[in-house]
Length: 420
Image (tube, rainbow, N blue to C red):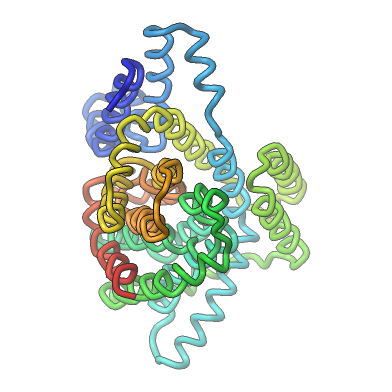
């Protein structure tokens, strides 16, 4: 492998950042033990801060080892569209009218399930939130589906002080299902979007090669965890009693959501739509809850940091991918995705020349199958963490517990992708 001192330093910093994501709970404990410096430890204990923080260290390192011009040119050469898009879509998808609309749809479906199977409403809603909403990611994009799912699960599960097993089990299934739920089209999942134009994969191709497999894995994952924890779920009657949102307000919010999704590759336009949306929401405050600007900004900061750090990792990632067989590509990308964003991984794979269709399918399948194993594995994961983190002990999501919780649904996904 050929590499420059800057690339080696960037990889060391990247490794430290990955280790940092597994240590956020330790920093939270330090904050409780050292109240005089609690602010600093709380800052370092927020997982959304990690990659943005270490990206700034990388830029300083490049400045000192090269010069300021080199550092600025590198930072300016990165593509931050995905980070900006996730920020914008989180703010809109997390608004009260959108959440109320999603709640109404899921309530109607849950009542149908109740009537057919004679079960309680809570398990029905839980199953639908972990199955139908991730599949919506193929239409409204994975970040929007993650935002909706996280808010719905917040009210259905996390506000009721669930057991640790239920908290992490739900998060593991959510992350895995969101990662594979956007594979029915060619524009919704970041790792698919990175290769779709290069490899000429349209939505029909994605649906025929991934659609059935992803749906089977999603429904099995959702059904399994629902059956395991059905007795721990609290009935949702009280939390569903919210002030009715006028239809016209809901429609306008949906138009903003659809508009931002439709121009996802044009940051100037979707940021303009976001600012317009914020103005509209401020004009009609009685139909709104506070917009999740802070949470969305932290997630955008996290993803932008990942873009900066990930841009200098190709020197070791690409040679590994070039030497893999299709089977090795599947399991290799599944493993590597846990320590690097799966979109960056598939993008590097698209640069490898002369690969077969079997290799390409294996690479993308592995990347999306492993997208729930860690916070950094899939771009929408930090959005879910930002919404749900405060309900975990010490407001810190253990990376180790998340990894363990995501392994069972990941195994089910592996079987679906390899056997169907």
